[in-house]
Figure 1: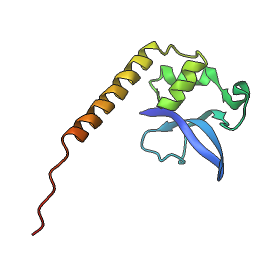
Figure 2 (figure 1 turned 180 degrees about the vertical axis):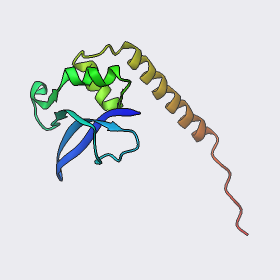
Figure 3 (figure 1 turned 135 degrees about the vertical axis):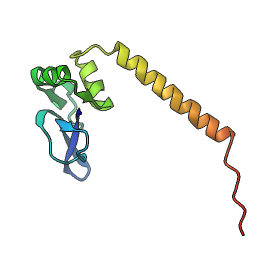
Figure 4 (figure 1 turned 60 degrees about the horizontal axis):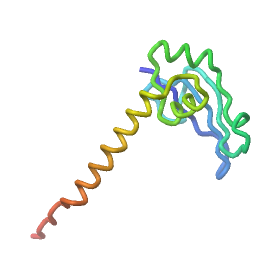
Length: 115
């Protein structure tokens, strides 16, 4: 399975990310299949901060590639894909996480007795 995700570059406290098509089993900074763009979070102008190869991204999405949450957010902001369904799924996932955390807080595990 292929994911579209970011690879971190740059130096300490000066991040720079490349957006790549990557096989699922590869580490964050490992080998990639194709570079699809880049993201510089420290640039103030959003138009210059994100550069995407829209044609190739659509190609990979058509082949079944799954974007990471961060990349999906970028694609939705740029209106490359429709994000209504994704936003609904994300809200459900966030709500489920919050419910699970509240449930764990309400029922803490009993302390184990020392021998």
